[in-house]
Figure 1: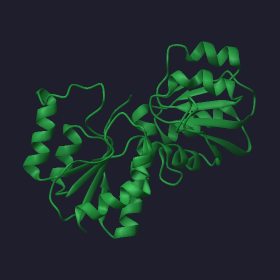
Figure 2 (figure 1 turned 90 degrees about the vertical axis):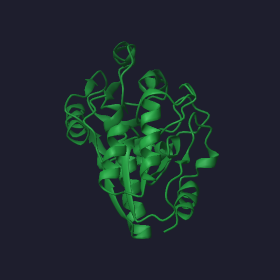
Figure 3 (figure 1 turned 120 degrees about the vertical axis):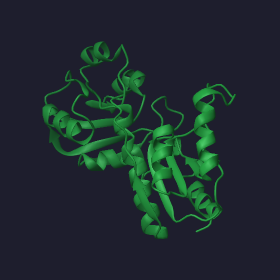
Figure 4 (figure 1 turned 90 degrees about the horizontal axis):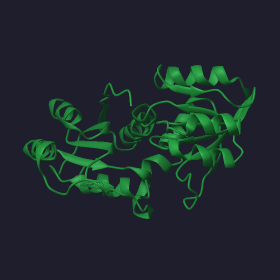
Length: 251
């Protein structure tokens, strides 16, 4: 299919224009017009770019792309090398950050909740500090250690778990990636547990004092779910060949 048709569809499906993000969502680096093979990865780095090129992909779609608001705007060093390889290979690069966190079908939080057997109750409003996260419920009260074990199996064994909450878990907040600093907001919402990617220094004390279970299952690990689900959606809808390229990233 044509490159512009694919990214126009993704922009609409993920409602990317409705987000006040701190990066560019959508097509970031333009490559060849015709697309048959789509590689996906959590982040656009030299490794994922080289893997996509070696696989002869026509497009690479990621969660973490380029052009972040706090990054230097000059193309020097590793920034130049990444862009150079994309242009040399005529490879399209697309990125969807907050839209892929928040989406109710292929979003990181929704897919992770379903993988844990949880029922999504509500999406938190964007004006809330814990925006782009969700609140989910367990069909029956969960044992905290079982939730920890399930997360370890789905994400990574070395996850951080502070089991400081009630004996049984009912309501759980999920906000993938680097949302560890929002543990206080999770406590104010009266949740039994909060799942995110990274832990903040204050997380343990807040979890103890608020009697909240806290889990940091990896920034990269919690954000594999959305991009993989998006690849499946692209393959099923457009009959394009897709492939997920993972990285050994413990953070």
